[in-house]
Length: 388
Ligand SMILES: *Cc1c(COP(=O)(O)O)cnc(C)c1O
Image (tube, rainbow, N blue to C red; front, top):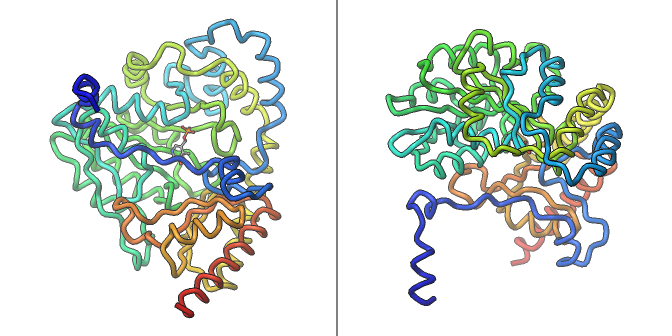
C-alpha cells in the first residue's frame, strides 16, 4: 500500500478495534457455492410465512411514488403505532430497523469515557454501537451453563452491580438473541428499580410477539413507571418485513426528542412506512405466525429429545441446539445439505457456546428437513471421528 492510501486507513482507534457484524449467509450464495437448488435458510430469524399480504399490497401501491421523499416524521405510522400499543406519537422513534434505534441511543448517550452495560451472549449490535461511539462495553458474565434458573441467561443482579458512575446505557434483550433466554417480570422490575435514573435502559423486545406466557413482562406497560426506559420493537421478525428495515422505540417524549436529533432526516423509507402501517392491521397474520412458531418449537424440542440433543429453553422464533462438534464444522456440513443455520461458536463473545447452533424455527416441512439434515450430518461426523 502506498503512503497516501495508508494515511487514510487510520481511523478513530475505537473504530479500528471493531470486529464487523457477520450476517447470516445469503441463500443464493450457498446455492452457487455448493450447487444446491433449494437452499433452506434458517439463520436470520426471518418469518417463514413471508409478509402479510396487506403489507405486500401497500408496498406495490407505494411504487407509484418512488420519486417522492418519504415523510421524514413518519406521521401516519406513528399514529398507527400509538393507537395499536396505547402510546402517544411523541413517545415514538422510528428507525431503519430497530438496529438503527439502538445506534441512535448509543449516539445520543455514549461518548469516550462513558460505558454501556450488557450481558455476555447479548445481541451483537450492542457491542458494535457502543464501540462506534468510542465508549466502553462492560460485558457482564451470563449465568453458567448449569444454572438451574436460566442457563446462559442474563444475570440481572450482576448487571445492576456493573453499573457505575460512567454508565449511561444498559442494553437488555427479552427474549435474548442468540440464546433465546428471557427474564421474568419481577427480576426485570428489580433491575429497573436498582439502576440509577441517568442510565438509559434499552429493553429490546424484538421477539416479544412470539411469547405466549401472559405473565411475560411487557416493556410498554413499564414505561409509565420508568422515565429512563426505552423499549424497542421491530417489524423484521413476526411482522415479516426484514427486507424493508423498520423498527421503533417507545420512551419518554424527552428521550424521543433527543434520539430525533441524531436521526437521519429520512431514516425510514416510504415503502417501509406503508408496509409497517398495513402490517399492524393484520392481526390474523401475526396470530398465524405465532401458532406456526409454537408448533415448530414443539417439533424441534421433540426431535432434540429423540436424538439426545441439548437445547437452551427458548421463547423466541429460534432454538439453540448443542452438538458434540465444533459449531463451524456442523455449520459447514449442513451447508452441503443446503441448510443454513447460525453457528455460535468460534467467537470469544460466546464462551460455552462453541458447539451451539442457532436455528430459526421454520414451517413444519422446513423443520422436518432441517432436523433430518442435522441428524444425518451428526451421524456422519461421528463416523468420521471414529474412523480417524
Ligand atoms: C432481529 C433483532 C433485532 C431487529 O433488528 P432490525 O434492525 O429491526 O431488523 C433487534 N434486536 C434483536 C435482539 C434481534 O435479534
